[in-house]
Amino acid sequence: MRRPRSAFFDRFHRAAGQAPMQYLLAWRMALAKNLLRRQVGGMAEVAQRVGYSSASTFSVAFTRFVGQAPSQYARMPAE
Image 1 (spheres, rainbow, N blue to C red):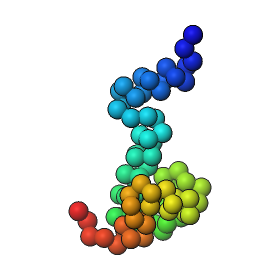
Image 2 (image 1 turned 90 degrees about the vertical axis):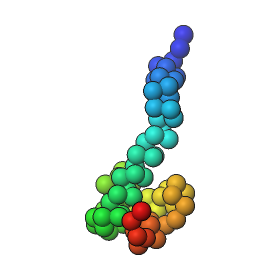
Image 3 (image 1 turned 180 degrees about the vertical axis):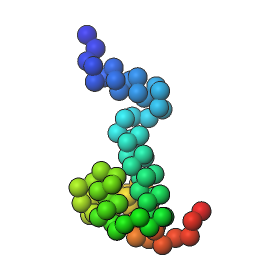
Image 4 (image 1 turned 135 degrees about the vertical axis):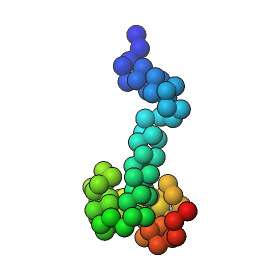
C-alpha cells in the first residue's frame, strides 16, 4: 500500500517539476527578493513576511539560495 505522503510527493513533483519543499523555498525567496528590492520594511519584517521566525535564519537561507546576503541584494541595482 502506498503511503499518502509519497503519493502527494510524487504527484506534486510531476506537476511542479520539483519537490514540495524546493518549490516552497523558491517561492519564499522570490517573495523576499521582491520585498528587498522594493525596500518594504527591515530585515526582520521581510523574514517574518516570508515565513521565517528570525532575521538570522532568513539571512542564512537567503544567502545559501541567492549567493549573497539579503542586505547586499537589497543594495544592488534592479535587473
